[in-house]
Length: 423
Image (cartoon, rainbow, N blue to C red):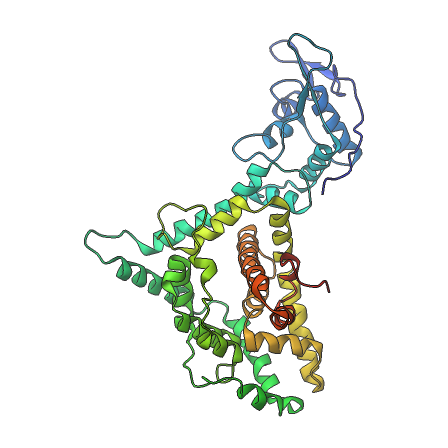
C-alpha cells in the first residue's frame, strides 16, 4: 500500500542554509572548511534534494547532500533517484522533483544508518517498514542470502574430481556438513523434549495418548538421530526431491515431532499414495549456477525473483514474529503443565507433536531470538515455500482437509496462506 503523499517544504535552491566561507583555493563552500568539505556532495544539491534534506530536518534528522548521493550509489541503491520533469520546456532542460514517500525514506535512513550496519540490513529494514526502497535492491538483498548458501554448500562439497561418482560426492559432502551441525541447537531441543515428556506424563492426558497411538499403524518405525536428521536435511537442500525418499520424510517427521512411537501424521505420509514432494519436483523458474539441477535452493532463488513485493514483505514480517511466537507458546504450555491443566496452548503444541508442521518453526524461533538479516531472509523464504505448498494442497482438499489445514497451520504461517479463515 502506498503511503499518503507528504508535502515537502520548499527552500531556496541557490543557498543551502549554511554560512558561506572562502575555500582554500578560491571559491566558496559551506561551514567550517574541513568538516563541510568532506560532507558536501560533489555539486550543490538540486532543489528536489534540498527539499528532501529540509524535510528530514523537520523530522529531527540531519541529512547531507553527500549522504543522498551515497544512498543512490550502485549497486543496490537505498534511495531512488528523483523523478525528472520538463515543465513548459519545449526544447531541452529538465528539473527534478521529490515526493513525500521519498522524504519518508530519507528520514528513515538518516535515523537508522549506523556505523558498521550493512547495506542489506538497511534495505530490508526500510522495506519491512513499508518504504519505497528500489525493488531491484530488495530482491538483491534477499537473493544474496540464497547465493551465499549455495557458495557455502559448494565450499563444503569441494570439487568434483574427474571420474568421481556424483552421488558419492554429494553424499560425502552432506555427511561432513551433518557432522558439523548435529549438535547445534542442543539447548533448544532439550527444552522442547522436556515439554513433550511432561505432556506425555500429564495425568489429565492419560487417556488421550493411547487413543492417538491406535491411529498409527507403523509405531515401530525407526526414527533418526541428530546426525541422521542433519544428513537428510542437507541432502534435501542439495538434491531436493531426488535426495529424499517418501519413507525418509516419515522418519524425519517422527524424529522431529517428539512422538516417534505414536504419530498419525508420519503414518499418513508412509501410507498416502500421493507425492508429498510434488512442490520440489516442479521445475523452478530460475537456477543458481554450480548446484545440482534438483537442489531446493533453485526454488528459493525463484521465489526471490518472482514473488510480488507485497507478499515478500509479508513473509519478511512473518519471519520476524517467529521468536516471540515460539517463546510465548513454550511459556504458555509450561504454565499449563505446571498447573496440571492442559489448555489451548497445549492443544496447539500437541498438534505440532503429532503432525510436525509447527515443529521446525518453534526450533527456529527459539534458536534465533534476535535473527540476523540473513537468518530472517532464510525464514521468510522457507515460510513462502511452505505457504505455497499449503495453498496447493488446499486447492485440492475437501471440507475435512480444509478443516485439518485450519487446525494445523501455525500462526506465523497463516498470513501467507490464502483460503484460511482469519483468526
